[in-house]
Image (cartoon, rainbow over all chains, first blue to last red; front, side, top):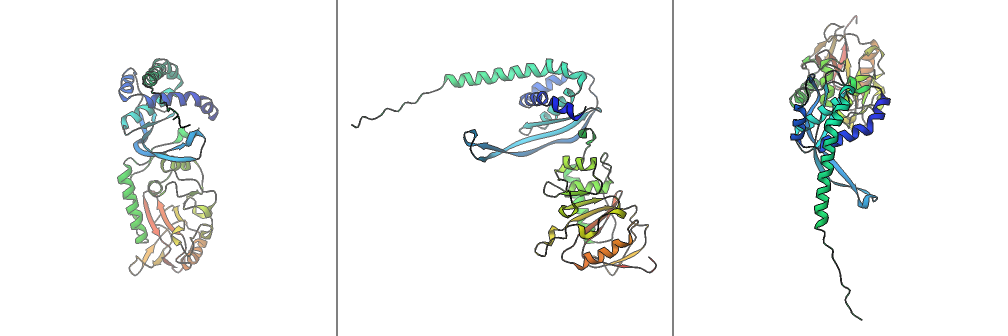
Length: 154
Length: 197
């Protein structure tokens, strides 16, 4: 793989890393059992929890401010002699960060990529967007309108 | 592709970093005494002692100057976030693999009179810590006299060291490494060359 390939694959990789880190750990463990013949795993950076500063902008356009810190766990590993897989996930679940990194490494392997995207990433992504939609529907249904009556003082 | 070359750092980060820190503290407080340092770190092409020192001492506030830039710089950046200094004067740490062609000691930051602690620390890999010409070291941390036999140092090095020592409290500190051993030379140490060296 060259730098050019990395650049071209970047949007696809961003997508699967997003889906993987939003997925639940049980879901990832389940997916792992469907894979056979895994090459040996070499930890380049064992899973480690840490903090990141979340920054925000008022209204999306104002000055940046520090919103607060979030716990993040990260991991980097290599499967066989393949590419380096990285996993970042919110929270302190080391195993999940490891699984995300493992799937990222496998997804960069062109012989496995198409199958994994079809069988794993796409269904997960559909499940996640369905869940998000259900949440926003139930939130929308409970929306309350507030009215303020103008007092007649004339 | 750079990431293909990345390899692991400490196997047990907390304890190995503590051990390396303790060892370098000991090495700089007892100049000239050999300290053994840890298991080998495969991958970056550095000696075990050098790799341990870099992993334990550097972080994102300490620019590292590399005499021979290469995959080791990427490896260190991945593990500790240490940036790469473009000039020796900007470095907090300098990694020197070829001592005969290294820049003069005054090319590195010696700190200022107000904050001498900002001086650079040089990590120098030499061919041997015990099979070179004998040199006498005196100063704090040494009872009477310590004979040190570093191999591969050019003559101009000791002349530069006199000037470095004379600039106290400013001046650089040096840790010499060879495979899994190291030896400290802090700026407080006076050096006297023996006859015939």
